[in-house]
Image (cartoon, rainbow, N blue to C red):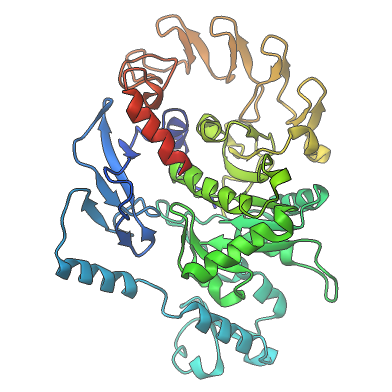
Length: 473
């Protein structure tokens, strides 16, 4: 699940300085014990607008999953009091926005569909729905696909139209190259179960086995796209919002996820997640820590110090933000590419290379990247790096992040992108045509370049402590 390439410039800025471009940040509720109001996508998040380091006095609740109010127009001030009539109307609206079929109905229809002979298996492309014979007349004028094979049923991401709304789902799917690499790597590392959070194509790849063979790995898909409900039984799919840890089918789905994570006392399981790039890192980190806590509940006392292995697939320029929440994570050089995105393709050069990487808490020296694609092992860094990522003796590291060969700046005392030069006016490296009067990275409050707004010493210690509490709760 990726974001469109035309968003990358603004996203790269977000990677270094948070959400300043939009001026919106996740905020702490005044009453942490009070439940957040709900929209059709589950509990909402509390946000605050920030302008030049100053928070506006009123905070507001908005949808956790949709950044465009055209997709979900929920809005409520934190201190707003709603009448019983409005609360009832909201509940009715939330129910109306749910899928037309319940999870139980989807499973019943799926079991009936797979029993049909091939000539009676039809899929409505207009409605994105598997059809039973009783449905044919209703969909008679629609665009239909016939003779849906067992192989097609096992690969729903190839039947369904990708949701490509840039500000909501941005559902770009792994290319076969990346999918096969990830599945093979997980098998090589010895994992027996994979929790796929927003990674439907990897889920499919793991489940593909030859007829009669016992699968080496099992997979559980957590995804917000309700259309996958019609292709999987309850032990293989849960409709889930990764921005607020919401299971749409309630406690039953949560228990499925818990049992999957805690099986064999939590041994042999890994979480692989591919969130939309437009989403905030902080809510994702909070959600992932809740999944980690769920996994830890099933561990024995002797294993309480261990971490849940994770592959978080995200653009390289979010490295500092991800490591802020997960300090044990490192970024691999492997470039992830996507099937239905013209620019996120393997084999491109320069700035056109895919910016998507794998962040993980697995030691990088255990992860072998394909040498046939140019990756090589750096004996000093003890990890595989891309062809152009040369070891810098001054930084004592292979420093490139974007796949190009970086250059060392002795003024900045670090390696920088090859297109950057050192500016004596700004006292930093930047593009040659940058504006010396333009905005700089650093703190919105005091202007210092050595920290961000969230870590500014000018913010009260109690406020920072509350911020940390939000991240780990």
